[in-house]
Amino acid sequence: MHTQPVEGTVRTVLRHPEPYFLDRAVADAAQLEKEGKIAAALETWRSIATIAERIDDEVVSARAWFAVGNLLLDRGEEKAALSAYDTAIQRKPEHAEAHNGRGTAKFILGEYESAIADYDRAICLKPGSAAVYHNRGCAAFMLNQLERAIADYDEALRLNPDKVSSYINRGIAKNARREYASAVADYNQAVRLAPKTANAYMQRGVAQLNLGYIAKAKSDFELALKLAEEAGNATLKRYINRRLQELPDLKRGDDN
Image (cartoon, rainbow, N blue to C red; front, top):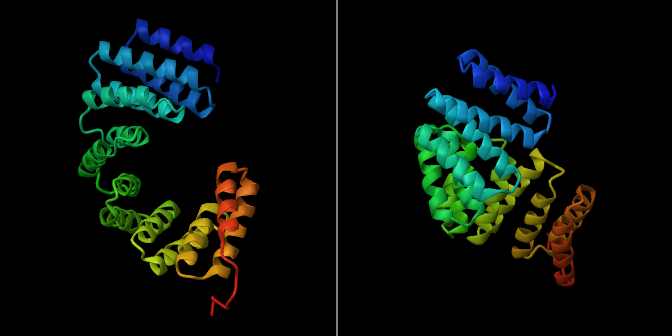
């Protein structure tokens, strides 16, 4: 599907704003997203929002502004995304996903307490989302509310036992609480589920080092470095190299 037919659909909707034509425009906007034509998708969703508001269809308007917010967030335009999510929530206050999206935009902007308020609302509206509990845990961690963060990661993993990022983040929170052995157990689960995740090995290396297991830490850091190189993650590579350089010499059999 190309942009020109989509523009034609939008013009048709402007002339005939009946539900059938609006549904067609929504389908076309979603197709543009799928094809990676983000600028065209944004323009189409905004047109849909304008049309929906003209005919007092708040459900479609909320959906359109939510889609705009997601696309802007993916492009790194957090403040613009925040405004789009605000509008989606104004149109449909019970839109749980829009509250979650707005919370994520606020999180990226460093507004952690306000992000938690949005995640709270999203959970109240739709309590079964592992992703929202995970996100709230991340915000709580940034506020150094470690026990609260761990509780949210616990719930995220109860809802989705295969959520690798929640195992890693719960391990990081436990490491911050000096619960090193328990952190290692979380990282073990993460690498079992996703053996190519460099960050899981790197974080496990940190916990092993805190337990005094220098050889195990070195092994994890080296594997993490290999995976980071394969993934082209220059930032993680620099961090792991620094960790390797800072390792104390192996002077004892510390892994027995």
